[in-house]
Figure 1 (tube, rainbow, N blue to C red):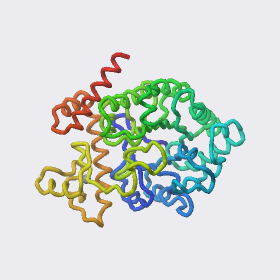
Figure 2 (cartoon, protein in one colour):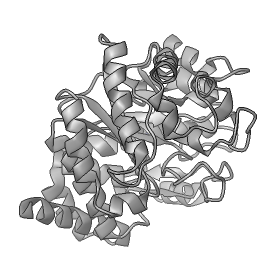
Figure 3 (cartoon, rainbow, N blue to C red):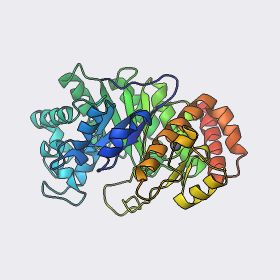
Figure 4 (cartoon, rainbow, N blue to C red):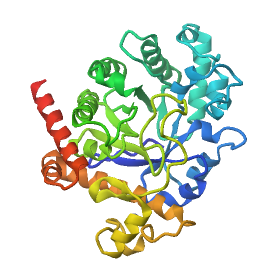
Length: 370
Ligand SMILES: [Zn+2]
């Protein structure tokens, strides 16, 4: 099933966590699809999440997370969880370095494993690796993987994934990357864009650089899927370049710069209530109080949504709300556009919303200069 992209507003895809088969079973009316990390479905899990998505007739994408493989020391390395157990890792020589791809037989085996891992998914991503510049050997490997995937699976909708750290993005390389990728990809190809640490803690200048990078890919006719950019995704939707957004309901809201667990992105993060109107998440107690005072509520299903008063054993209600409220936020942002939403945000009481307005203005000014 090819990814159903809407021309009117970005599709909203939910990144699920390792134990979220119950969410997948219930989320069909709340999200446009789910993104499943390949390592969550490796033995002993045996595609539990994928089978749940198929049962729910939900479109899904598989995140191969190939960029994590070069961090593994060998096939027994469990430092980052089950990465070494995936079909993709088993087709690689660990530790993985760019020279692996100079052997056509090994490279093809790796790409075939990537194709197998994504059977049934709405798109087939070419494996990709983090790179720091156009001269980085991994950048060449990424382009090689795209070209070869298209030859090995000519009938499949091949998609690309660009994965960089905040630092690499700020070096200004992404518009050049966009130009280079556009030469390898047919117009209309989907391209997932992951920039680490992209969220509301970034400065307006940094967010503007992100928005300009997304616009650069879209200007070449690529359909940009904004991956884990926190509430900045709502600004991407109103800037108009985002064809889709991939974001988790609790974790997987921002992307870490590396798979090492030295960042604040860990499962101890509490489930919060997503306040779409103000593009932020609030503590459950605060949400409950604001809800009782009539100052906060679900914009999608009103009283039918049980998230705001959900008890601690009803976490799934908060997750379903986060999914439908994010989809609604993206739709509203796209419909209003940068001018209208930007001027609302400029007048807002919240500093983060004024920051987003400023980022939109900066990105707009830069695109007029270019
Ligand atoms: Zn709701």
